[in-house]
Length: 76
Image (tube, rainbow, N blue to C red; front, top):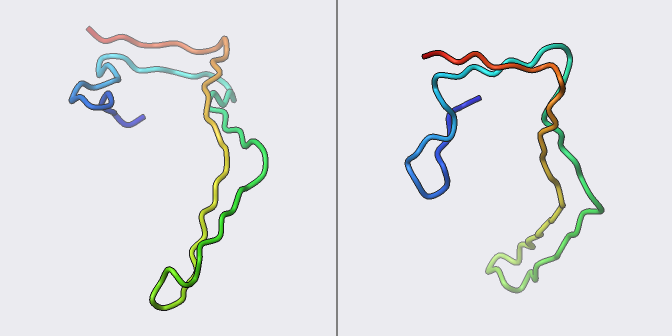
């Protein structure tokens, strides 16, 4: 995983001294898609070249489901 900052700060989220290990074929990151796509049409007369714009919305989510088979190595 790449190192990230907390939102609005310069503080790192992940500890550089810990390595996380996931054993087996577990896939802990789950992605879900819910419902249908909502599409809103723009008005062609809003643009000088009469091109039309579309806004597409889709509800998705991510989650982490940890299995029993995981561990961490901590370096001191």
